[in-house]
Length: 142
Image 1 (cartoon, rainbow, N blue to C red):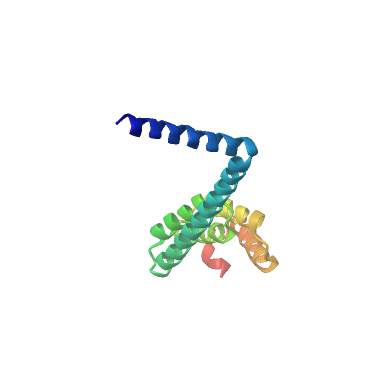
Image 2 (spheres, helix red, strand yellow):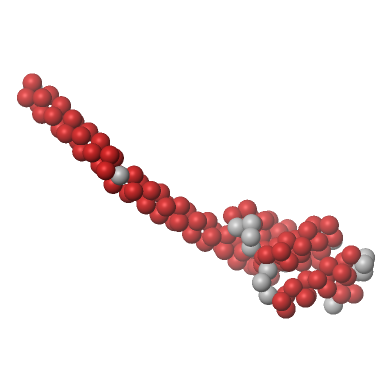
C-alpha cells in the first residue's frame, strides 16, 4: 500500500512539473489561446447557422400566412445575428403590411439601409420609407 502511495505522489509531482514547465515555456498558453479561438469560431458558426434556420422558418411562416410567427422567427434571427439586413427588411414589410405598425416598419427599414450592400434594394426601401412617412395607405404603394 505504501508503494502505491509513493508511486502516486511521484506521478502527481512529475505531472505537475511537466505542467509547470509547459506553462513556463509558453507552450501551454499558446495552445490554450489557440483552442479558445477555435471554440469561439465554432460558436460563431453555430450561431450563424441557427440564425439562418430562423430566417428560413420566418419565410415558411410568411408563405403559410402565419405572420405573427414569421415576425417572431425573424426577431429570433436578429437576436443571433443583429447585422442581418434581410431580416430587418422582412420585418419592415411584415410590420407595415400585416401589423400596420409604421413606427416598427420604419425602424427596420432604416436598419436595413444601414446594413445593406445592394443599391437596387436600397432604392426600393427608400421609396417605401418616403411613402410611409407621407402617410399614404400601404395598398396604394403597389
